[in-house]
Amino acid sequence: MKVAVVTFPGSNCDYDLYKAIQQVGGHPTFVWHRERGLEGYDAVMLPGGFSYGDYLRAGAIARMSPVMEDVVAYARKGGLVFGVCNGFQILCEAALLPGALVKNATLRFESRDVFLRVEHADTTFTAEYQAGQVLRVPIAHGEGNYEADEDTLERLESEGRVVFRYVDSGGSVTDDANPNGSWHNIAGIRNEQGNVLGMMPHPERAMEPLLGSSDGLPLFTSLVKSLAATGV
Amino acid sequence: MSQYQLEIRVKPRPGLLNPEGKAIHHALNSLGWTGVADVRVGKAIYVEIEAANGDAAVEAAEAMCRKILANPVTEDFEVSLLGEMEGAAS
Image (cartoon, rainbow over all chains, first blue to last red; front, top):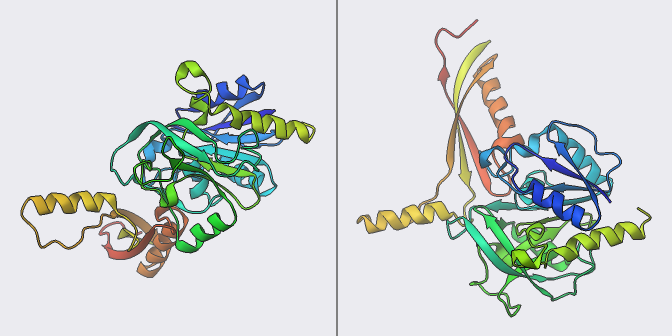
């Protein structure tokens, strides 16, 4: 599995992602935002961080980077694209995913472990989980409050595109379990075709029990296995 | 071509939660301004644009808003022409 990890000025989870890909036997390559061309990669990942200092809006300026034209084209052709945290914000700004991520309702930067429920295990990214499984994964963001208009939310829900939701340790969707005010406790969504996933929590930081959780690992093994099934 | 000064106001969509406005609202209330019904925070961006005339400068600023300066999901925008810069005409 050859993966492009796209880096921007201000990316800071790029090495976490790099290591996570290596851990499942993949071959990561850093691609600087000014570089062009994503041919030959089996997946493209956008790491967390604070690209361009979150100026204007989180992800707004990174979205205009030269490489993003290639990321959009890659996604439109059906290539696998995964954005974590700032990467999710960039995917929304690029309109590869609907909606927007605005300031946390708490007005605080939230940096801690949260519980997520896997809503759908029938995606390329979540096949190694069970639907309804509760994960413990860290978050670290100031602008993770998912907003979209009513029609978009309704479509996301009816089409089963909310992949991860903030829940309590027992797996129940509650206001207390929602760290940022996201509509419907949304933590991660996929696009219509299912080849683009964005999420605010950091599965790439939950890869080893020693670091508190290895609940992020199946996301990466899901990718490896589904790519292997297609002959990669 | 002349150089024009413009003010771009990027405003949060009504109805969307505006946590910054809410915090300021709370502060104003606790300072005694209890009659404040609502506070919302947007941003103002000041640009100087070279253009054939004022209308063209406004058009350019509006195109910038649609492309990058405002997020159509959460924000509206308004552009005002503040004036033509003196001595900048060529």
